Each structure stands twice: as C-alpha cells, then as structure tokens.
View 1 (tube, rainbow, N blue to C red):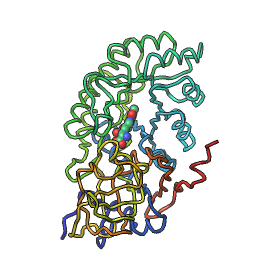
View 2: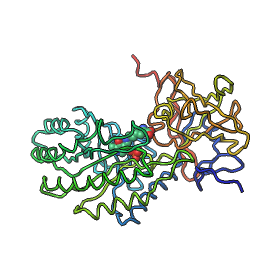
View 3: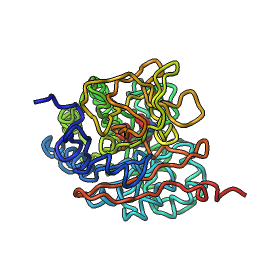
Length: 433
Ligand code: LLP
C-alpha cells in the first residue's frame, strides 16, 4: 500500500486512481465542468473543522465558549450561512462585512465588530446595524461618544487591548500584538479606556485580544501566556467598571499545516490551556474566540490549468491564474502544496516554477523563485490544485492587470454548486466613469 500524502483525509481530500478528489468529487471533472481558475470548498469539511473546535472545548469543560467565525478569512455568504446553522457568532472588521453578515442571517447580537482606523462614517453604519463595537483606540471611543451624545447607555462596546511584549503569527505581517503594532489599546492606557467608557455612560461588556494569525507549535504557549494576562486585565477592568463583563475574547489565530513539514494544530493543548486559565481566574463571564483560518483554510483548493511548459531560467509551468487569485505566496512567501490533479502520486517528477499570468516578477505559486517545486507529469492542459486555499484566498483576490477573480464552487454532501461566477469584463469595468 502506498503511503498517504499528509493532506489526505477521509471524505475531504482523497486520492483515487492517482486522481485528486475533494468532498467526493473528481477535481479534474470539476475543472472541466466549471472552468479554471476555480476555488472549490468542501462545506462538510468546514462544519467538521468547526465541530472539532467545539468538541475540544466541551472536552476541556468549557462548553459555553462563543466561537466567532472571523469572516475576513472567507466571507462568502453561502459559507456564512453554513456556520450560522452551526450557531457560530461572527467577527467582522469592516462595515461591509457587518452588512453582509446580517444579510446572511446572523442577528446583530451575534456580531462583534473589531476594526482599526475606524472612521466616523464607519461608526454611523455600525450604530445603525446595532452590533457590538470593539474599541481599538481612545480616539475611536471619544468620537463614538460625540456621535451618540446622551444615548451612550444604549450602546454596547468592548475594548481591544494589546497584551504587551509578545505576539505570534506565521509571518511578521500577521503578528498583531507586541511593539510596532497598530492594533488595540496599549497596556498603560487600557484601564483608562475602561474608566472613560464608564464616564461616557457606555455599556462596557468585554475585553478583547488578538495576538496574531497562523500560530501553532510552541506559539500556543506564548498565546496562553497572553490569555492569563488578558484574564487578569479583565478582572482589573471589572473593578474599574464596578460590574462583571459579559465576555473575554481571545481572538483568532490557530494555524493549520500547509506542508508535510508543518504540524497540525494542538487543539487539545489550546482548549485545555484556555479552560485552565479561565478556571484559575475569578471571572464568571463567557469566553470567546475568533478563528478564521482553522475553520475554512483546509476546506478549499484553487484549481488552475497549465497553459505553458517551457525551459527558461527555470522550468516554467505557466498557469491561468496569478496572485490576483491567491496572493499568499507572493505576499508572505507562503507555502501552498501544488498537486497534479490527474497524476497525484506519479513517480517521475520535474522541478517547476509554477508561474502566474500577471506581469509581475513575484507572480508565482512557489514559496520563493529560488525554490523550484517537484511535481509529476505536468503538460500543457494539466489541472493543478493549490491546497489549503480556503482562507485568505478569494478574500484577498483582486482585479490586478484587469484579470478576473475566479469562480467559486461549494460542495455539500458530494454535490457541487457554483456560488460565485467568474468576473466578466463588463463587471470589472462597470464602475469606471
Ligand atoms: N480576529 C482578528 C481581530 C483578526 O485580525 C484576525 C485575522 C482573526 C480574528 C482571524 O485570524 P485567523 O484565525 O484566521 O488566523 N492574510 C493573512 C492572515 C491575516 C489575518 C488578519 N487577521 C494570511 O493569509 O495568512
């Protein structure tokens, strides 16, 4: 029997007759049926990931944890609806995310808005939507007070703080705590923020931290240190307020493996660590988390077709998508597994630069232009799958070079449905005057 590839998992990514299947469907057939470039998500996997998280907290004796899905990872309403059915809460970072979350069926009480550099226009939309506003700066707090005047008592807010000297993340760009970080209220000012919010008359219901995105391994312990710090800050905040908080939100960030050399997320260690820190505190409030990547990251793949095979400085496999479809390799040097959908495990491999169709030297899907990727059997016409593209893939896509954003397909119970059309030329240019 051949050894399994690290990413294979039952009813999700499977290999049959050397071909890649997702959610029970053949990827090459999906590529033919819907065209490429194409994002394909397995909805059943999304639910499975969400339930795995929930179960870990039930086992850690913290069953009432609120799981706010961070929709910035993948904001498609079909995915939001799936997670709403699972009783998820929602973490939004822009007014438009809030409006889409409401449209997808989330009630305003289940939505937390955590923005940064939030304008008065943003605040007006949030007030109208009646969602909980997580305050990121003293400026935002003061401007919010000016907007609501004597109605502050009707407005529920929480406070995001930066828990200090450390953050964690898969790349410097995804670390959101510690020094040189624009997010949250610094340690020295956070109790002042609570005092001020109380004087202003707001209903202050929570404390929030988010230390970064895509951490695992040893970083879980770093995260747990910030959890203890945040819980003890919450106790101090309660003293300042003179009443109990409704929740402490520990942010998102749990990572996923993108390659054979990366670990799976230690979900028990994470859940038990949070539960223990909470038991050791004097707090009686709820605990919330805000995972994005962990819920949707491995559920999605990007299918793309090779149109050019040619020896240049490197052996190039030119494909019909680019960093306008998936920017993570170009932006973070991120690794995404690249699989030949029709010859997954063939032995004869050659090393390629899998190059996109944008006019930029950084437009390739290898983690670096110096790292050619061994892939078997590539020919012009071959369909390739970029794995673990469900989070921050389509969400960060663009029309750079006036290229279309790809179509999206959602599989549910082995049936595929188109959930986003590929942009047409008309759609791309229709806003221009
Ligand atoms: N909560 C807040 C306040 C956040 O800023 C984020 C992510 C999350 C939750 C969710 O983090 P997650 O569980 O997905 O790690 N574009 C990058 C990731 C940037 C994350 C930004 N904030 C990437 O492609 O890796």
